[in-house]
Amino acid sequence: AGLAAARHAHVHLVETYWPVLSDRSEADRRLAAAADELRRQGIDVTAHLVGGDTVDAVVDVAAETDAALIVIDPRATSAVTPWRAYSLPARVCARAPCDVLIARSAA
Image (cartoon, rainbow, N blue to C red; front, side, top):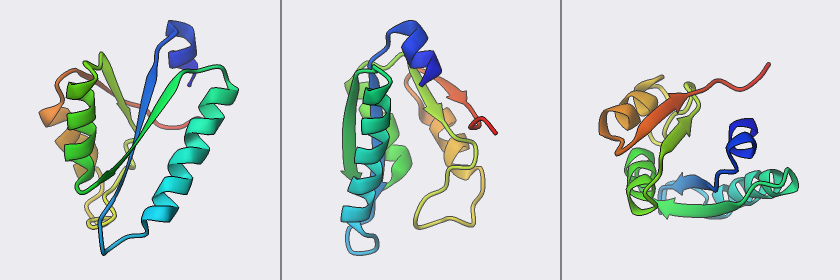
C-alpha cells in the first residue's frame, strides 16, 4: 500500500479459488476487504477474482493489465498445495511478464 501510494499506482488485487474445492464466497470476501482497505488509503484498486491456479491468475492479470510490478508475499501458498512453501512465489517469478517484488508484511 505504501509503495502504491508513493507512486500513485493503480493496484490490481488478485484472489483465486478452486471451483468445487474451495469457497468462492470466502475468497470474494477476502478480496473485497483488501480492496476496501486500500481504497480507504486513497489507492485506486481493481479486484480480480479468478477460478483456478494462483500463478496462472497473477501472471495473466499482470500481462492483461501491462503491469510494471507484481508484489507477492513470500509465504503465499496455493489452496491446493499449502505444503509447498515458497513454491508459489518462485513460480510467479519464473513466469512473470514484469518485475516481481517479494515483500513480507510489516511486523
